[in-house]
Amino acid sequence: MPLGRRLTETIMATYQFDKLFTPEEANELIPRLSALIRDLQAAANRLRVAADEITEADPTMAELDLGAMLERSPHLKVIANEMASVAAQIESFGCYLKDIDRGLLDFPFETGGEVAFLCWQYGEPQVLAWHSIEEGFGGRRPLPGAPKPWLN
Image (cartoon, rainbow, N blue to C red; front, side, top):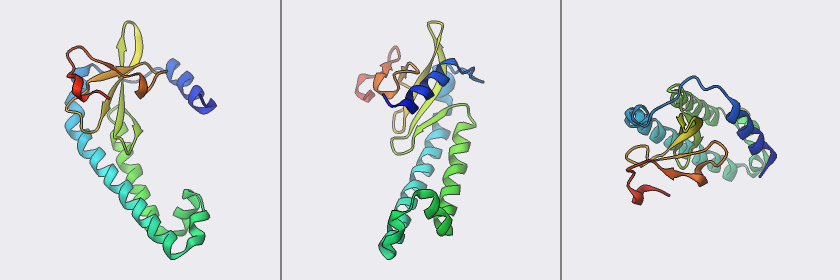
């Protein structure tokens, strides 16, 4: 496991979360969060397309990291700022955006006296799974009563 990921997990495992969710509380947010994830994914796609167009027109731009590319292209910076705004809206609910493309969100909750994460993926009808802080998405376990076909 990469050092950065281990460090993040160590910090998260000892972090005092402002809010712990129940599955019901997380599910109440899913309609709003679905719309925000859809907006964020659309903006990410626009950013990729625009970046590809820029690098096709000027191949030297492909050598730049994203930050430098954003500085040289105000159009890209506008899209990136839009993405940052939507991501901030998502996290303002108390959940954590884990992956834009997959639409993964984690909601801190308590199970068995330990803090873990309820895990929701864009397209799922509700929160169906949870995982420990250390395991992440790969360690998802179904919540009681969760329909199995939805779990990855």
